[in-house]
Picture 1: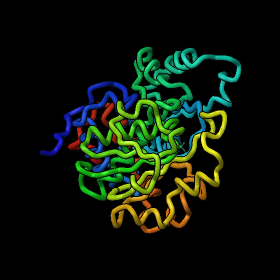
Picture 2: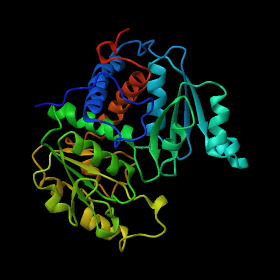
Picture 3: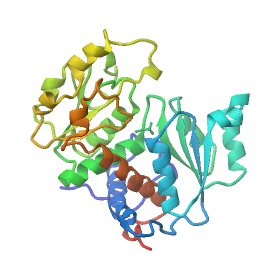
Picture 4: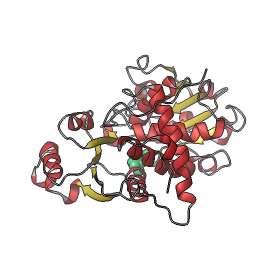
Length: 319
Ligand code: CP
């Protein structure tokens, strides 16, 4: 039996996949499916969020997430304010909560936040009336990335139920791995983590994933393979002997990819480190859906904004 989509999201915020029900995930994916069509129109805009204001509060670097949110907001006709910590009064010692209180005094409807500390979006959601959307918090969660990943997989296979998805690389420091493990297991897919022991998380059982210390056995029978970069910004030293050795044992090469199912999807949330976790021939090959993930990210972020604003999926792409 399939998962019934919810009729609406249960919360004013989207701070993590852990707090979402399967029906809410289904609703988000179904709504994104309708909104994908807006990008194919000559005028890529619907009036859904006209008169609403979104603050994009990015306190860590970002290319895909930040621009994709901004495109999604503009396609929904919202007014957008872009906050970058390096050019703000955070450099003079202002805290996140004082920053948020001051921004709230300008009456935004949404705050999209990326922050280096685990739980920052959750804490913010408790003190502001705006809808808070987590664009990545420390090593904790990156819910919008997991949703766009699931959306991309579902568009190729029709459903997530029964699929086997390998997530390989620096799992320990990856919010993408955690959010994907929560989401894929809720939707009936099997998750395999593959990493050197030093890069596996301690709470692997809580994440309902099987763990593998070598990539080859994890790849056998896989429907999709998601490669992750090594997050040097979250560890003081290399957790393995050398980059060369990492490539030899854990990089997705054309030979290793042949161990997965024929036509298995090759995925990466970006930014990629070619020649470290992924070979260029694979990253740019026929099975790669890496740029599709980026395109789908806009539709997913439009769906999140639309549903948090109180929308219903029947009319999502209405003009
Ligand atoms: N996938 C992702 O979060 O990429 P950015 O860091 O460029 O936003």
